[in-house]
Length: 191
Image: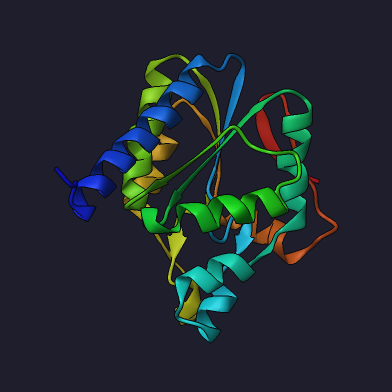
């Protein structure tokens, strides 16, 4: 019997989610969960020029100071996981982009269907007593010129016992390559 394409995609999504969860749950120490679009990758300017998401995801520049921070964490032995709201059909192009731009490597990548779905994984990590550092702009609409926030999601993330850095701090980092993100006493600090 031949699997239909939809069934295959569903099985593949389940496999990716299980692999992500197992990878995160077996890691000890600090866990870094990092978004991609407009957090590590400067995708929105390209969306103004091109509507082909595959090309946008391939061509996006990285924010070097955020990538430097991620690489420092990996070199210090920390676990870095990417969790991004992108359609699963872009998994390979996303993985290739990360391999080209995040030189310290990463533990695992998971693409979810919506920003709200990320909360499920964050809550699971909290439930499993993981120390979570979460880096995500949790914003949208950059390409329209009006940045909007997932306010309800930000509120819910802020209620979790995790360390979170969002759009206001990331924007400062993105605007100046001279700024650096560090962790001091289990808090994100921009210097």
